Image 1 (cartoon, helix red, strand yellow):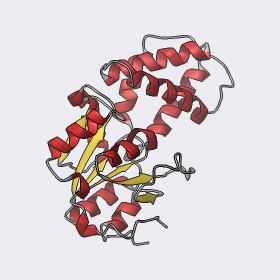
Image 2 (cartoon, rainbow, N blue to C red):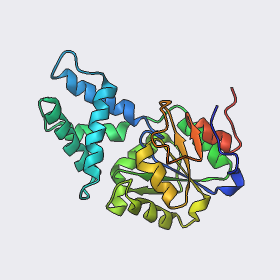
Image 3 (cartoon, rainbow, N blue to C red):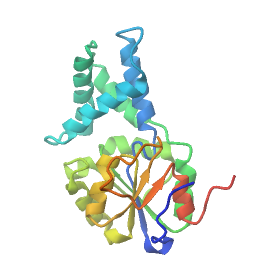
Length: 238
């Protein structure tokens, strides 16, 4: 059952803002598969895909906190650094392959129906994502639900968890942040920074992990986006 903050009622929220990758689409699964496929080109028994993907993501997280580059460059630079660390042969095809994979990631099974129910309930939907405009366009196509606002790192020249991203997003949406519920899988990218601007937060804990930071308490913890549908007053009917 979704864990919910009873004091935040449906009529207190006008906007649901989302992280996209890992929240709406299966970012971990896609890049776990891609990293494992690179591993297989180098050794018959690479480590499991999730382990490889976690290390690549750590490298990527370090890079996005440096000077701004487009996400396509971040993808290429991070996978090159990862290959070097893993002692895997590098191919110039890997950078474009990462971008293609990013554009092709499929939505979680609960994403479209949950978002449709939220929209039916009168909630406005927005994406705040660490990506490029020409990548998110494809991701929205995979999701199959329209969004009222889409803000990407390319618009800001910075990546989450930079406060610049949330400051810009709130300005573009033009609503009171206290009436926004930011819904995200990436705890370190999203939950704390959103709270700093007065947004309510929902952590989508798809992997049933322990709370990463006891000092940061989301208003909601959901195992998937059916928690959002329930919050909107349109729960999943078994």
